[in-house]
Image: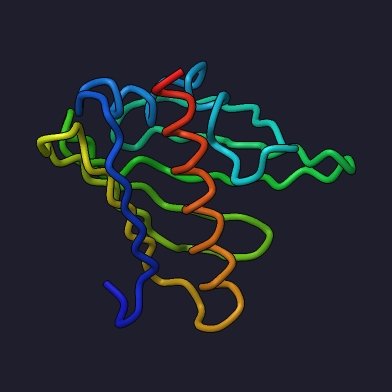
Length: 140
């Protein structure tokens, strides 16, 4: 989609089906869908193509970062595509793929249509932090 998407990957020692559910079940998403330890998340969704989601990332200092979007493609347990909008970016697109590997599942997040510069780097760090939290949630 864009010339310079943010792409982050992580191999997590669990099945594609379990990781796919971790990206689609609001109860599980609320346990990991925030980049830093001292945050929490509140997640709701209507999980179908054309359905939407709301992720509210709560910071310890009281700030709340709200992310909303629409599911564009759902292919269990291989791929998810959804729009990603916040106060910082609008009309961006996230693609998540789940590939089986010897040691579990490789999750790859590609975030397209981000403006270059600071927002790109902030989202790279944010997605990396979220994947770290996802891994600790899945193996605990």
